[in-house]
Image (cartoon, rainbow, N blue to C red; front, side):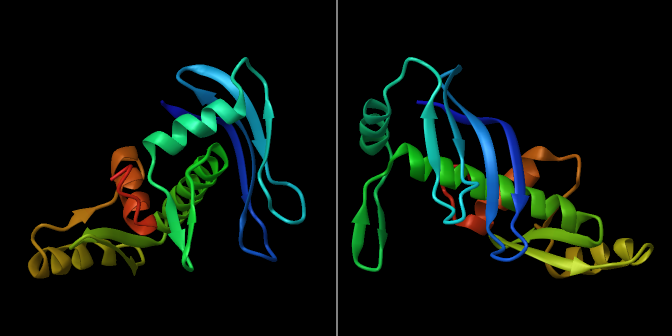
Length: 161
């Protein structure tokens, strides 16, 4: 089952620093739901816009995605959790793009590291990083795959990595 966010409107709430969003949820190439979390509690609201039933989608996701274990509780995978994961991933990608304007971002040893730079320092810093870590990968604003990989590393998301 391929789940995508489309027409995503994403902002970071200034007070809570949590993502606020509205999006279309497409499943296997068809629009199926609309989602948002504009309510003050941040809960994700899902509304069917297609023929798919949310309970059926939740059951399919629960069979194909691992449950989440937190604080000793096991939470079954669901459309709501998948949407939350996709929104978090999009928010991290947005943050990475923003940081690339003023920082050299590098994937080193399975971690994403940001080095603040100004102008000509970028080349010198890149050379120093490569001397220390020859397998380092430098992120570029035009490299969607690299930004996607970095976001997956930051989130510890092996589904996308």
